[in-house]
Length: 364
Image (cartoon, rainbow, N blue to C red; front, top):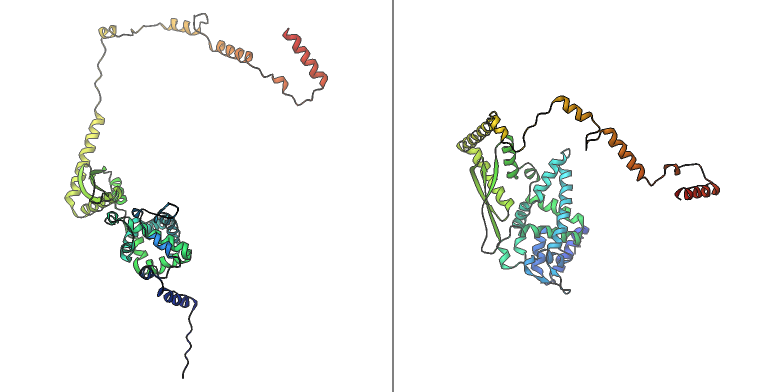
């Protein structure tokens, strides 16, 4: 009889114990689904169940407070920013702060998280009302952040870091492709229009609600009042991004569209220059028109004007010296603070009494 010894590491042993426990747990499907997504079995399943609960369910706990994933989403958003910032910092040594910030924003932006939630099957686990399930534009991304918050409370910061490195950035996302890919089409179009001094506007074409009552927007880009492309989305930002994306493609591939924009710009600048060069006509005023003015013009000789300026006897006219004297006398009369009282020399009681008596006799 041959006895074989098998040695397990601590992590392998814990994983084996979790698998054995799974056989006796009532929510085997949820445990298995979460294991496929996050790579380990939850310790506190209630945290993950709450992370997958959308606010549309309107469920309340024993204390009457609503139960949904909004609080875990708030926590997960902060943890995700810190973790992705740490990963980006280590992955791109020597890159400047602006590049690092832009890369982190691309990795944690709503569109990226929504795509991750869809690809990893998180959307299929979200508990929500039937009305909200059709509008999962933000639901998946919010649930992804909430799961990060649940992981942080259940296993700590390192577990979240391993999840992002081993599961997300190794299997689902390529951090280099994301970092060097231009996704902010609106910013790119604004930069192009400013560089070429092109007038850019966003025109709202339509704002409505879909069958589930979710808001939808449709925006169109206008360049020098030339209609560009339009885009639709569940937010103003999303619809404008789509419109800018299609307009940039049109600028790249349609030379006639570009020519029409610069022709319109030339016409606008020419018109503005013509308006600036127009000078209003000025004609001489006749003696008859002068006499009809409400306030007649009175001629005063230089001698008379000099006499008025230098005379102190003219009623209502005072010289600068007189005004200064009056202001000084008024300030002296209203001065209630005696500067002589300010002294570093100590006074005896006899001197204080003598001054008080002198002041009393002076008032009489």
